[in-house]
Image (cartoon, rainbow, N blue to C red):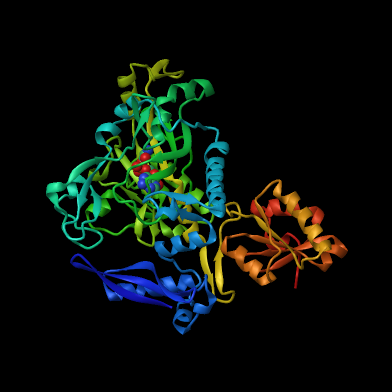
Length: 555
Ligand code: GAP
């Protein structure tokens, strides 16, 4: 049984959700969650937590919880998402058996599949399906001068402050000192102990050497710019893409995997001839637009076509409009809910040291609108810095003008896999009242497991067919084989991890060499010949065919 308790810590009062359980004849109390600083906040949060607990423990269902089930598409809190991700094997706190280490996370069996699928889809769309972007994979530790040239040694810092009241550490910008209050308790920050805190992790290299774990993947693309351009004979405009680990010693990692110390970044540096126009048509996308001017004048964001925002001068550069639309389209193509997105321009005092203009693609997380992807105009800041610090010429020859030029990075779409992961999880998460379980409506391309194969009963003749199907499909996708529990339980287990198709081997399969495929979202079923199964699955996963047309509907 779960209940709220109040704890006094220092001068503050904090509410927690505790649970009593009888273990080996003794009643043991376990703290399940922190609920906030007021009873009202605690009660609301408890309701949400209990709602997610019914998925773990059906006995918890009572009339109070039933009321909360009335919505199919609910946005659960980030804490509930963390609970769900742990329970289903998506994400665990790293080193949990030792109490965990703040800002570090491990991806479990289904989490790693989802993460890999997100990366695969990103790479396909941005590298394979375009002729103007090539990839690279730089090292995590590189020459320390790279970080001196980039400005990270001198400028990549936050202001570290401690709250006078709750004593918790926070990060703020220098301009915010004396103006903002502690997020946790509303207390004042101690200005006397405020200090600049560089976010790079230092590492020892060999016996006496020193460098840093890279805080972004971007710099490797600048340092290797000439090598990439010459070896792949790229002509402007072109881009270099990279994905990989980056590390930031964040002062206050928070919100599950939203702000971490170890991240996986995905970035493109898109190089153009200085001041040249965009050569591509701007995709026809409509989105909530929030310019720096709107923010400064206290106006609300406006729904606009990105093309129109460019025409009206809200977005200044055609390249910026183009990349914002291209990025937004990618999220939509994989089933993200467009209503949860907006683009927001950085105000002057927010711009990073290298950037002259920056638009963020933001997502409406349960804790508010937050940066999902930054798209900065870096001009020639990085290439000129690396020319200066290395003494090497990084200019390239322009056939048209017969001159050597230093390209500009007009846009740097830069995001983190963990935030993409959260977006797809939040938009996919549904609670189905009728089925009484969570349905993770992930696009099949992203689903960790593409299909689960069930022999209807544990008998040799069914198992043999089911195992052969498993073997055949597994050569292409992650497939599960599930023979335990009722068919209903097996469906529910798969719905919860987003498996789009469940394939059942039944009596008919033995007689007529066919199987049923059940669609996760609708529960509709079709019958398909086993000889056509792999091809049908491929078409279904790639969205090339409607489920209802992929086989004979089962009534
Ligand atoms: N090269 C530019 C750059 O690194 P950034 O705005 O510092 O820019 C880009 O980071 C993206 O990387 C962010 O939009 C976010 O998706 C991801 N990111 C940055 N810091 C992060 C952190 N501590 N935890 C999770 N993701 C982070």
